[in-house]
Image (cartoon, rainbow, N blue to C red):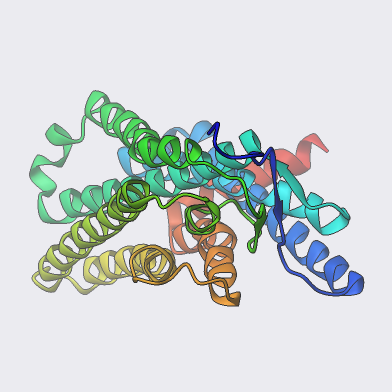
Length: 311
């Protein structure tokens, strides 16, 4: 970038431009949401680790998912909280791209884990006789590792491509996170390759995983309708219903942001959508997955008893 006079060394994240009083209120709301998310997902991880009954593929996937949600909020929320209280809402060039990488990698990993959980449900309900032979310990371990590795490799190339672009003009990002859309807009050279890679990869993972999940649950529902007893029918329906709630919450917002063309316009909508899949879903996921589930509820009660006894 020798021909450019001065390259950007930091970015300004505008966040939510509003009065100081409103910033404080938002800070309080975000802090409470953040703490509840850490507590809810932390409780699930403890339950899965400590309760022998939960050492099954379904709960191992759920424990990893809860662990992922904790890091998903950690990639954006602490920085947002600091920005609410600071005058200069700056983030270094490296910090911005690290945040972009981790935020998108966690999002990709979430797509893989939601798919893995749907596959697990499909096997448990549609292939019950083969479940124990397919979902063995080593297979489950490989599935978990694959979700993490694929999730973190998926968006690496677009992040590297965008970070290599020349940034020499404005450094103001009208968002509370470093997102690919605003960064591509700030580049002072046209970047068709980076745009294409970024858009294609995010659209691919979102649409393919969503399709895979829908097919899995469609097959599950077909199998459920053929179950003889009403109680097993009810149980399967509840489990799948809660899983589908999580899926719909996450995918509906992420699709508006990253699949619909022209979604990177700087309005309030991208911020609200990002808030939704970056903060609201990680808060509700543990609730939705656990409260409908007897084994998980029992495990959480045990932890609570242990905790109160130790106090």
